[in-house]
Image 1 (cartoon, rainbow over the protein chains, first blue to last red):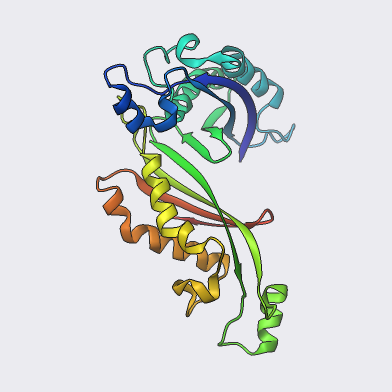
Image 2 (cartoon, rainbow over the protein chains, first blue to last red):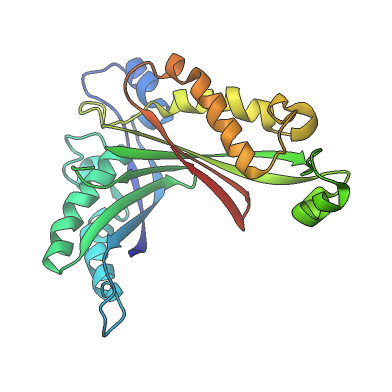
Length: 138
Length: 140
């Protein structure tokens, strides 16, 4: 079964490559290249894959999942400027694609230690745009 | 690999009625949707594409290119139209959400390689919500 927990955080970012001109960045990233940045209310959906325990009837303790997501995603990213304050986005462009991959890297080891299998990370930058990562092997 | 999903909206009217069925059968199968004068929906279309992240830019697809493709091929053809009367895809097909998903797939595939000539991104999924309560999805 798949179980999904949703968390939200608000952050600013800018999508620019330092080697490109303003014009080239604008052609590549559109409005997201505005040098002073802009913000989103990000919605992150984290999905685990597992079998319900025969005694408790649950796949994984949602309280524990919430703690991991708060510690690894919300605390470091909420009300931050991703490019300035959240590594590796000082070096890596904080596109939704890279954000989904980074969130996977942060939460996957914590969930594995706790005995859960991460299935997917979905990052909704707005209601109309989402990037989903299911691990390096997918 | 990353899957990117983009959501679009269009509003259109339709009537579900098959000329191969009797009036009574049409009413029994399509219910209210068989209303003679048609009716409309605010459709929500989700188009998903899949591909590897380009390491330098951090992107898996050019979303602006996808937007202009979907606007040109789908939204401009379907939005504020009567699907039965105005959209040739439904000249011989009942505009159910299932057939709408199939028509959207055909329209996108027809010109996909002109917009995305490389191996990636590939078209991954098409989902249409007719109302909040009804969603039809094609896994491609």
